[in-house]
Image (cartoon, rainbow, N blue to C red; front, side, top):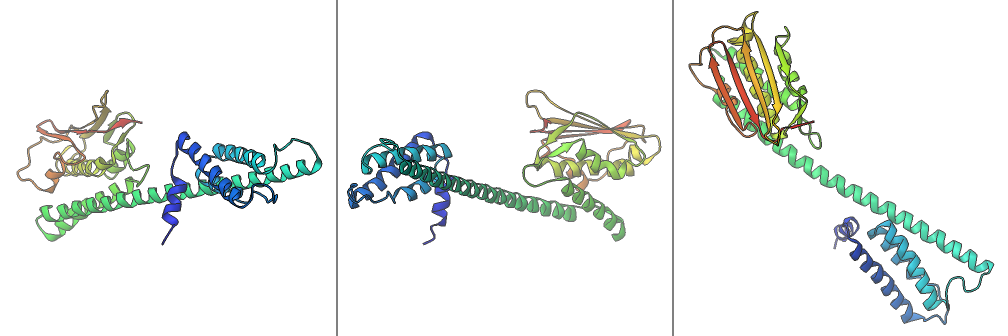
Amino acid sequence: MDLMPAVRRAVTRQRGKAEQAMWMLALFVVPTLLRASVDTGGLALPFLTFWPSLLVASLILDTGFAIAFAVVAAAGAQRIFGGGGWFVSLDAARIVFFALFAFSASLIIAMGTLLRRAVRHLEQANQQQEGFNRELRHRVRNMLAIVQALASSGPKAENPLDFFREFSGRLDSLARASDLLRIGTEAEGRLPDLIERTVEPFSGTGRIHLQGTPCVVPDESCIPLIMALHELCTNAVKHGALSGEAGRVEISWFVAEGGGGLFLLWKEVGGPTVRPPQRTGIGTRLLMPQPGLDRVELAFEPRGLWCEIAIHGGRHL
C-alpha cells in the first residue's frame, strides 16, 4: 500500500488553531501513555517516545505550535517521570542536559519545518503544473478548432495560389496570436502591446494610430480579438483605408467604469468609398459575436468602415 499520498496530505493540509491544539494534546498523551506502560519513572529511562512526537509535530503543525509542544511536552514529562521540574536544583549536569535537550529539540523542529515547507512547495508546484496542463489542452483544442474553421469555411480565392497566400496569412496571424499569449499567471493579454504586435505587419507607413489606456484582456478573448484585428487590417489593405496613400486607421479603447468591460473601436478614414461585401466567408465570421467577443458591431459607411468590439472582463492594469 502506498502511504505517500496520505503522508503528503497530512503534511500539506492547512489546520486551524483549535485543530493544532488538539494535535498537540494527542501527540503528548499517546507517547506519555506508552512510556507509562513501561516505566513510571523508577527505571530512570529517557523519554524516548517524545522525539518521534516532536518530529511529527514539526511536520504537521506550524512552527509556533511545534515549539510550544516541545516546551509543554518536555516540562510535563519531566514532572511526571523525572521527579519534579527541570530546575528544582541547579547544578552543572542539569544545565548541560537542558542545553543538549534544547539543541536537539531545536534541530528537530528546524528540520521538520524545512521538510514541511519543501513538501508544501512541491505540492503547490504540482497543482500549478496540472493547471498549466489543463490550460494547454484547452488552448490546443481552441487552436485546432480555429484552424479547422479557417480551412473549411474559406478563404474564397480565384486559384490555389491565391488560396494558399490568404490561408497562410491567416495561419501566420494565428501563430502571432499564440506568441502573444502566456500560460499560467500571465495568461491574460495586455493592451496596447497586443494590438501593436498584431497590426505591426500592416503599419509600416505609420497610418495605424492607437489611443487608449493600458488594460488587461481576458485570456479567452485574446485569440478572437487578434484574429478580428488581423481580418480588419487585411480588409483595410485590400479594400479600405490602407489600400491608398491618404487613408488611415484609428484604434481606440477604454474600460467602462463599474465593471462594464472593455470597448474597442476600429475606424477607417480617408480611404476609398466603402461598399458592403457581396459575399460572406471566414473573415465575416471572425467579425461576429463569439466566445471571447461578447458584442461586435460592423458598419460599412461610405466614408469609412468602423467596428466596435465589446469584451466582458477587461480591466485597468
